[in-house]
Image (cartoon, rainbow, N blue to C red; front, side, top):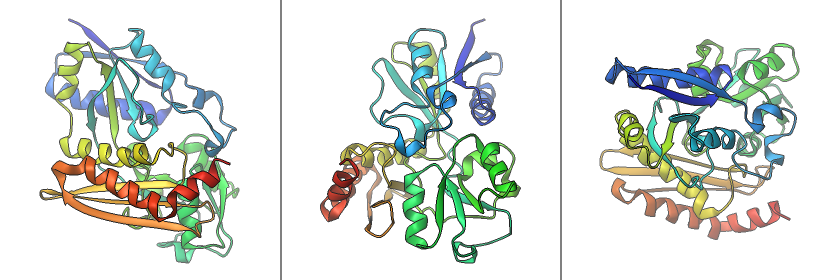
Length: 307
């Protein structure tokens, strides 16, 4: 019997996410065996550089993709939001799955149920310019503070008083069994997530017919449609994954609704749009909303960020 090798990062969250994928596959193929190999990425080695200062892509994924291309693994599991929008030659996204928690959440030392209840000038830990822009847009007095490291490291900064709160993806907190730490979750229409946030991407080699068929069985069609639409916003805007841009799509019957924004870092020039149309035209709608953002001032924001 063939043993399928699954490549992933070595952190606790990455392993938990990989186990989610393996568990879903074993429900369909109970007799198939899986082996996990842990890959150290550049992002795992460099835990000091703020993510918004990174100029290259694939910070958390390229070494895993290389292992897959080299035949050291049969499939790879990624947080879909970490994958560059330009797909690696020779590889494909065979499944998008487990997108149960899309939204960002706030974890604080003292209980709060809204941004308004945070203390004046509270320090809010995050590694995302998208979150920085939105939190400043909501309250200009708040002080976003750059934090790196895994979920537990960020929670430790909170527990030791280095910050007053941390913004994290709800999916990661829940997959680690730490949902009780969440103070409140943001409405993803109001506080827009990163494109493909919450979804797991299972990657395979294009020419591996057996692995592709195996993994396709757990593909979630709605999750695929919404995440690909959100990522198309980034592609059309040509802004990269570290820009202060967010996109969130949801299916409503036969329609898809896409919410997206771009902002300057201070959250003052905050441009947000929404579009709804037939789900079968999701790619066109994503391109349309991206072009609307660019035409409404987003192009100038991106140009100023790159100078």
